Length: 283
Image (cartoon, rainbow, N blue to C red; front, side, top):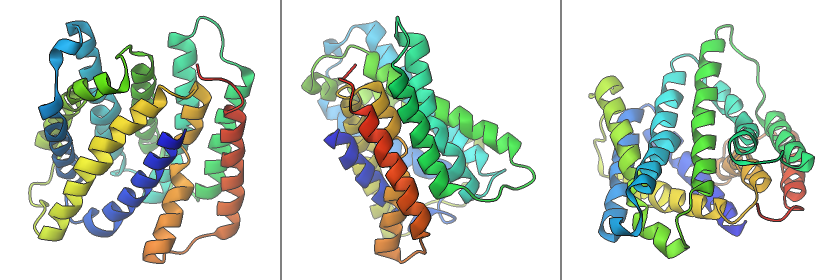
């Protein structure tokens, strides 16, 4: 679990940097493609393709294409129809999708009821923190975000269930994950990016380097390694811990307003969901 907690803090800080220095200045599709290229360059020198049969290599590349590539494509399209607050609100259903996908596709028998309850509590806790009034035209954006949630959830579960050997072996094949992600995000950039909104100064490039090498490269590797070491419910509930962590980072570093009552109540519910999930061994 400590790996997932560490990545949660890493991603919380990274989302804060995006909001403060890149959002509205650098096109999202361009930024994501640059991040994927940098992450791929990080792992290419370590790539040992002979460590995996071809079928698993294709599966790992497909996981990267879905978990990051298609997910970001749907996510950024949703911003055309939703406010930032609505996007954040609609991402809270990911724990349910993680549990559902693992139950339906990979389990021979139903998952414990306790795990479903933990996933439901994770959604409730995040909703307490993030719920705001919705616009009149939110439905299409809501569906896009649910597609993104499904892609991110599916990528995590498929990686968890794909036999890849020990952690060292996974490091040596993880370039395939970003090959898939780079291909999809590259096509999305060519199709949808605003070429006039490219990174233009040193600070933006430094932040993109951090996001590509640390948040994306090391972050996704660590998250997926951690996914293999926890049970499905722990993985599901940790997907929503980014919400209170991100709010706290924004308050500490940028002084943004926080509804402390809602944050405390929602965080308590989220913590109870993680505790409930942790009462069952890894599976």
